[in-house]
Amino acid sequence: MIILKLGGSVITKKEEEEPLIDHDNLIRISGEIADSSYGKLIIVHGAGSFGHPSAKKYEIGSIITDEEDFARKKLGFCITQSWVKKLNTIVCDSLREKGILAVSVQPSSFIITKNKRIHSCNLDLINKYLELGFVPVIYGDVVPDLDESIKICVLSGDQIINYLGENLKPARVILGSDVDGIYTKNPKKYDDAELMNTVTSCDDLIAEGSSNVDVTGGMNGKLIELIELAQLGIESEIINAGKENFVKRAINHEKGIGTIIKRK
Ligand code: ADP
Image (cartoon, rainbow, N blue to C red; front, side):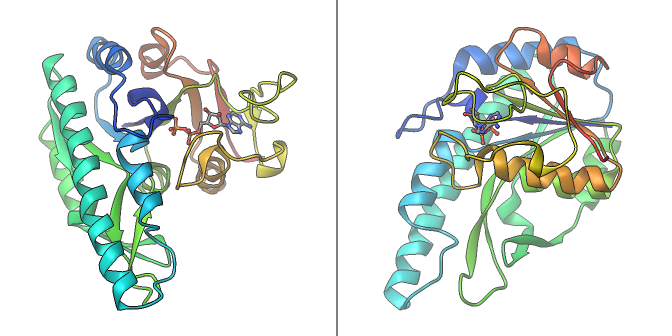
């Protein structure tokens, strides 16, 4: 089984305030997946410009101050849920148009977090879809939270990767982003940032966070999830999905075209 993440920075124009799809990337990557030998595959995608602006505006996941604040955040929840659902429909349609049997799996319909970490998430449905030969497509979303002080929060695609990786033990975890892998520091800010072939600890990079408006933690947040997964013996690799055929090559078992995250 392969778990493939399509970063919000790849399939949307993430720096935009408006929800905008990067159609060139989405269509090309859908074709690359269709042309590869993927077998059992789960696709997780980020929210990019479809989710982050409204999640940020309505401060979803921050402490609720009063009833009025909660009412406003709930409205923001509905708006964010709707936008990421639209993105998911576009992604599933694009995949299906290339012949992939993509089925949508909506996190806010079955996942509950506790203090922003996944608490309940029944994977029977995803397992069943895989058994039937479908490709489940799940994504960064907003979900209810058991913590009374926040009640709702943002669930990142990267946390979903961590959870699915731990519970489904895939052979490969591939994360497609808009950079070549993990650098010593943010390559978009620093010319002297160096690409790393392997990362075994969060201390390997001078964390700066993402240059993008990212409510789910940028590269630093991503790395924390992946290091946790690596500790369980599940390696992952961050590749540049913006580069032609990289997704296809990674699915076709090629290793080392990006940064591998593994335990020491
Ligand atoms: P995605 O949407 O692809 O999941 P993010 O936007 O959350 O990815 O994170 C990728 C971004 O993180 C890159 O575009 C880059 O600007 C930023 N970044 C920050 N620090 C680093 C680093 N050390 N190495 C690579 N990218 C970094």
